[in-house]
Image 1 (tube, rainbow, N blue to C red):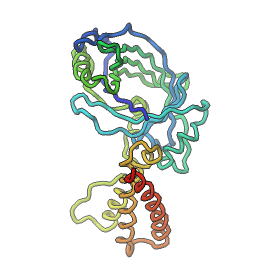
Image 2 (cartoon, rainbow, N blue to C red; image 1 turned 45 degrees about the vertical axis):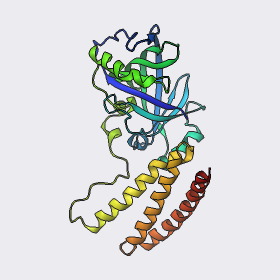
Image 3 (cartoon, one colour; image 1 turned 135 degrees about the vertical axis):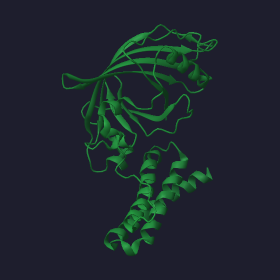
Image 4 (cartoon, rainbow, N blue to C red; image 1 turned 180 degrees about the horizontal axis):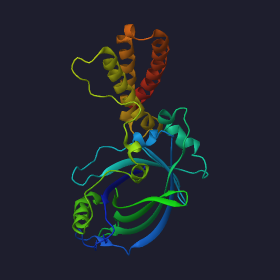
Amino acid sequence: MPVEREVKLGAGPAFRLPELAGVVEGVTAATPETVRLETVYFDTPDLRLARWGVSLRRRAGEGWTLKLAPARPADNTAAILERDELTFEGGARRPPAAALEVVRAYVRRSELVPVARLSTVRKRVRLADAAGAHVAEVVDDEVSVRDGRRVAARFREIEVEVATGNGADGVVAPLVARLRGAGAGAPDLTPKHIRALGPRASEPPEVSPEPLAAGAPAPAVIKNALSESIANLLYHDPLVRTGRDPEAVHQARVATRKLRSNLRTFGPLLDPEWTEPLRSELGWLALSLGAVRDREVLL
């Protein structure tokens, strides 16, 4: 599964891309290219995907792209955003069934609808090492957020899209330093569609454990314990479905077992008509995950 690795920087109207050739010894820069991108993002009406750090888009000429929740930044200084990226074929109106299956834990019985439309003028510069191998691409995006024919908002951002291997990581800090020296802003992990959608897209997911105050009442303690396990299970579900990360199966299994244990522990305070069927279903899920995990260990 491809992994998108990038650094995002803000930029004002007066910003101009500096000369990038030689930012690291041996690195060359291709002639800048300008392209126009038309992108539609899909989400549930309450923006569940965005709130979980996931995005599903259709871009004219490129098909469908699903980006899963980002990993932690690999470098706190450069703020590299790493996200698993999957592509799908399909028509323009409805998200592909295969993409829906990956995010089923988030979408559940809701539907995915268009929530943001972006028109982007992108200027990009490809960078290569002395051997001609691709190491990075710097893009300057001027983005218009569209509401029908009206432009609802505009913003600009610079991205350093980092290749995997070829010593590519060694060019990140020098590139960021040169761009910032030319007037770009500090690294910012906020994706485009989150900027476009506004504050609602940055709200916590619908299941989010909250810090407990000293002497918190029983309902708050129960909610916190259950939320922690549910959130952990939901986060790892797409990774289990894609098979990208073997550790995700283990983490999902741990979350399932902990949730069953919590339901048993707090059972006297909960409605058994709700908890018992749920514990039974979780038992089935734990066995299924266990079988997959056992095969992984043997391999």
